[in-house]
Image (cartoon, rainbow, N blue to C red; front, side):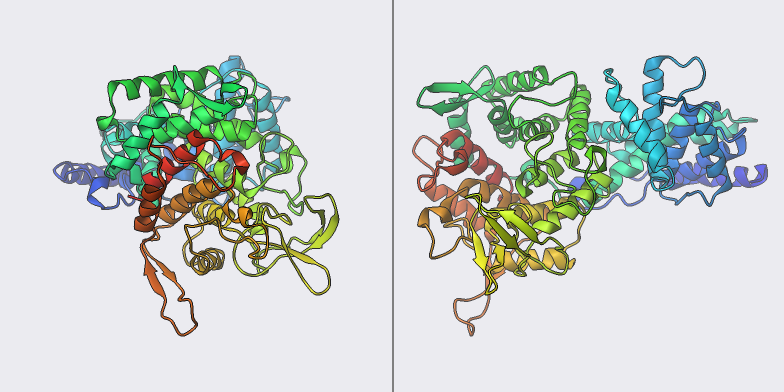
Length: 594
């Protein structure tokens, strides 16, 4: 690219910047979208960096700065790939700095710097869509990183997280945050010759703002941010405040009360559904103590939080910590996120795509996955900053659709054992709902004439499926989502967790009722469902328009106990004899139902 052309681009960028300076930044509260922001300064920075490249290296020519630029190229509004000669040259530069152990770093690079550089290289090769070309190299990088005990905040995702955290704290939207970097780019070209090294971090900052803006455009607005705070919610919160000591929440047993870290994390998430401006001093104090408890419980070795059901507890902790919206917690969240990624049942732990549990996440490492833990992990990973198209979420989709009774996408069939340990042959059904995991349902099976069985779809797992699909970027018109929503509308009820055999034990219909309320509200809210079209009782009846939010609020208001709590009085399975847990579920549901 010629200097004269670069100068014309710079003049255009400066002109655009001056014009835009008088226009107020787009507010997400206004309902408008950010769209693609900072296009011109990004293009100008890339052009200058390309012109200044030496032997494939960007910026100061180091491995790290080259990786940073490649990562930005892969995430920005343009599409760059190996078809571009300068991309191929940059990749060669990266591999010229590769060590035998799989790490990256120029000669003499300190160990901590090698960790950061390797993280940037992994980001770069993935961002520029080189995963398939360098799969073995990336696997070696990741294995090396997993062995390192030092926690380093580096890589493109950390930069995006910082933009989103500042935005959430009211410290400027992505347009405003990118202004300083845009000025650096345009000012750099005003001199006789820009220094490439000074353009790398501004480029990364601008592209991080672009990505943050895209995420804010794509993600549904959290209901808790603008929802009114009801009397029922306050009463429930006051009950929860009696179930803790020093920020730790307790499980009640016949032997007494015992602190539980998973319950504590969920309770902190529930407490934080109350708008920060409305919280009392005591409520703020409990949240502070609770967050410190979660941070203190994180294991240095692997980033997990808690000793029991570690995926469940770690994911709950991620939700509570990210709801606090504090930069100081970013490192804890990132390490917890990496733990969840490490226990996913994928190639890195020996799974192949054809395996039943491929893509799933269970209660902890080396355990079979299930729909409940997987959707919970997907939610936590999104809260921790992963995009919907991240490979971990796309691999989770393979598992999720194997739980769905939809033959067009569910390829699972084979011999499994029922809850009594008896072998049986199972195949997918075709009603669109979901079971617990491929071949297994907590509400039983439907027998076919040849003796083969279909795991029954049921409410909580079908809503968990819809929630997982939405978080993984599956659109509303996708056949998988359409089929799940049809099941939901055909089986709409708040009096039970639907799907159990009507001829079976009546108690079974009420198991997990409050968990059902929570995932119902989360799934429908995330999917942007305002009204449900519920079929009439007779074929000739017209479909009814159901305002699910209103019906859920009414149901919960009618069943709240005098002390502000809820409890499942009809089935104690899955800890729903614990008023604290049911109250947490109800509060998390109400946050989405306002």
